[in-house]
Image (tube, rainbow, N blue to C red):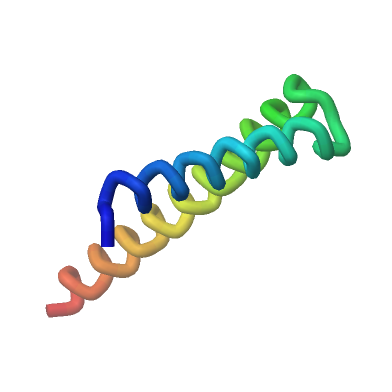
Length: 65
């Protein structure tokens, strides 16, 4: 199998997919980026909460021993 031909085919498919996504996107890029930022901030907040809870649990377990 020719690696150059395979790479070209992959890149061409990626380009076609990107163009299709831009043409068929239901919202503007600005709105989409805003939604992504908001969801990322919410996920980061939840992760921070879980990490702090885990640290508290670890601290309690270490104090018991």
